[in-house]
Image (cartoon, rainbow, N blue to C red; front, side, top):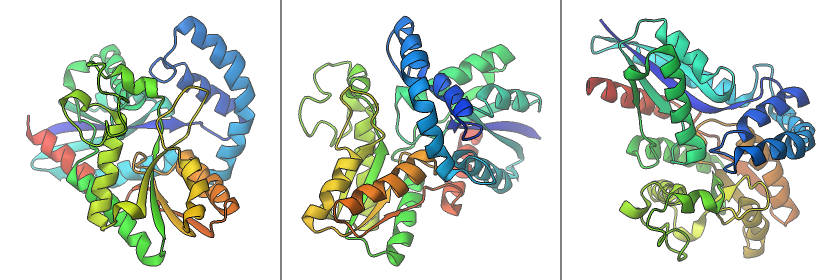
Amino acid sequence: MKQTGVLLINLGTPDEPSPEAVGKFLREFLMDGFVLDIPAPLRWPLVNIAIVPRRRKQSALLYQKIHSDRGPALLVNTRELAEKVTAQLGATNGRRYVVKFGMRYGNPSIGAALAELQSEGLDRLLVLPLYPQYAESSFETAVVETKKRAQELGCADKLTFLPPFYGEPSFINACAQRVVDHLKEFSADHVVFSFHGLPVRHLKKLDQSKQHCAMDPDCCQQISAVNQNCYRAQCVFTARAIAQQVGLSESSCTTTFQSRFGRTEWVGPATDEVLRKLPETGVKKVAVFCPSFVADCLETLEEIAIRGKETFLAAGGEELRLIPSLNSHPLWVAAVSNWIVAEALRA
């Protein structure tokens, strides 16, 4: 029987919500040149002297708000997805699947997960970075790290990477069902699709034409050859596809971007600013869904469900509901499993 390994990759999380563990995680994350894209000699003092000592205690308090007896939220949700995909795949079409997950930063590391898969004597390794939309600071860095660790283990020739899935019908369907199910029990006046933000320079760097990105307000409304890897354009596509399937009008939903950091220009509109302004338009109840996160984590459970709610209520809103991420929803488990089987059968 053929044996195929599957590696699911997520961003990562501190091992525990202590300042020491959070500081270690932040250093690894921010020292990645794909994340903080400045020269290494400048990055080191900025991260280790200016940012981490100042932010580790504050960030630890935020992680403590969402930590449970089962562990960090992102770790728990990613583990459950891997377990349910394992159960759904089983032995399919005469092929055995071994599913592991690794984190780009923190534990379990990509290298550790690859080592476990390599020990199984597998003939192929399918890698699925759990990032719907493409960005160098998420998808690309996961690919580069995986190739590096696989080369060290002598299994780089077995790797096949599944691409970003921002427009995959089964992903859109799972997201739309998530939204529909929660709108049935919560009559929202407005729906906000909040995506993780990026510095504008990250997007402009990928515009080889230098004549498209951020040149006009509608540059992200359509995806073409010139902006096929544009993160913001892919986010707009995802939000529009979900809204259309749910049956939301353009006026009843807004696409926003969260998690701004530093003083540089970030893509917008900013989620916190939109939540602050919505009550002025008569919106009293808002539902927020975050389609760039397939697993609930700090950015959804704390930044939106806690701080975002506080922002909305302080501005005159009455209720904010976070629609949970896909996590291990049956439709999402089925989608991931089907992608894996389809790719395996291409061999």
